Image (tube, rainbow, N blue to C red; front, side, top):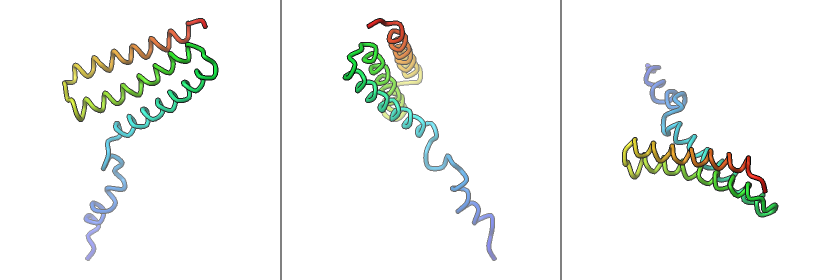
Length: 109
């Protein structure tokens, strides 16, 4: 006789459970880092064409954003220096990113 509970737990549960096999936060971090790198490349390309210093600041901000994701992931898996230190580094980088965007907006070329 076919045990439907066993069939469900062996075959259907892995298909239904979207968190099985990978962490959702890790997948989102990868997507964010890739998108930040794409925006970095686009803003650097625009800077080369126009030579507007504000685009260079925006490029640095996008680069810092991608670097922040990498540091956060490395802290979780490699360094493990502690949540307080990691939180301080991430918060400082987020502040620097916001500051660069603000300066890029108000700066005159």
